[in-house]
Length: 334
Image 1 (cartoon, rainbow, N blue to C red):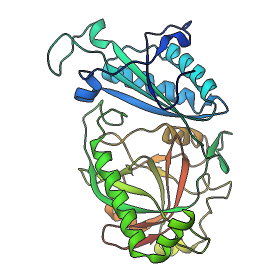
Image 2: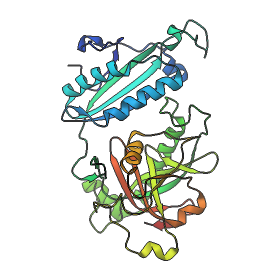
Image 3: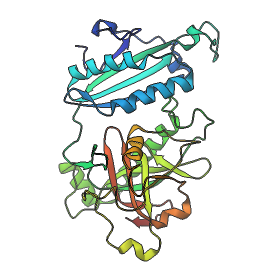
Image 4: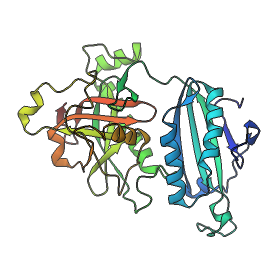
């Protein structure tokens, strides 16, 4: 079994390959992922030795390899990842795919087999994956449901990208890095400005039942001004038809009908953001209902009319929000 929390390079794979194809190697400094961000990654949760949403992760491998002109045998790669998952049992697998070092100097690569060759790196991390509470989808899938938290709008912005780069989970994530740093500053300022929250955080790292929910995620807009996603997650929302509709007893996140009640929207990712695995799981899960998810932009004018909001990703599942703090400081209750 490979050592935990260490990066391994997966050698060229075949459907019949075994763990002998996994070796501990040092990444060279001329690796194109390090030098240019020439590659992509995906992060997979593992429970009881099984990869969560493995079919969706395979779809990501295929779509990203096609978009970046990389040669990947996703079937053989998934077979190796399933063996690693059995060793890990509980935790996270992070896979990074980079283009192999090229003969040509600089950014370019040759349109050939060598130009499409790639290096594949894997890290296994033993960690708990929260599954205490799960939300059933109409298609029978179960999705983890996190405790209710609050959200805040961030001033950081996402880059607008041309197709086919928009939506990819590429290695170019500096906009998310800066946004995540801003979110951490907001969290720290919230704690220091509220002695009760700070004392509660230091003593138990959990808020009491009567305390205001802690900040769980930040909402990001792109350079066009549209609100797109969270710092590490996608976003889904509902809109109230009128101000009075907000007080009409909206469904509680613990209600099994939470996802199938009301019209859910999620922003378009045609020019920015990451098309997450859990986002697609939820879109597919609600596709056969009377109100399938609608792809719709989220603008400044929409924010005061939000009636429901949650973030989601493949590791944490659904993260419902009780409020959203706007850039103006106004708080929208959900």
